[in-house]
Image (cartoon, rainbow, N blue to C red; front, side, top):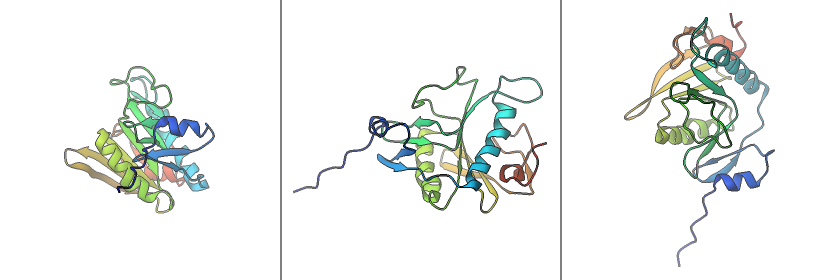
Length: 193
């Protein structure tokens, strides 16, 4: 006799847990997100400040603009994968109206995750597989412990590591290469000016 096939979770299953549950659906399994550490929260805040100030606006003016930038919103990738990314962004040229609703069903153009010991495999393997299948063009990994930024670009064969940078480096990191980024800003080492 065959074992019963386990039911794959959907957004309805996640929503039934209540709005106060911090969780994602990874390959059909509901996975709770760990409470963020101080290092995680600081890095997430710095990333949001850097990207929103320069890009979360209409194009033109002092900064390039052209993006919608969000943190901690539910993004659905099909019926059985839903991620609550540390940061995600949509190009306004592709998405003229602010991504709305819960979950957002339009795939982002950029996603960033901040590593911690409890989520390392999920961010480096599981989510990378989900994002690749959804054809998300850009994926950033920030490691506050090592003070390292990894920038991945989607290629027909998968994600290619386009840039590795550490605190102390100044880079132009795609898809935000219009503006120099002092990587230390993301980890609280440098001022953002």
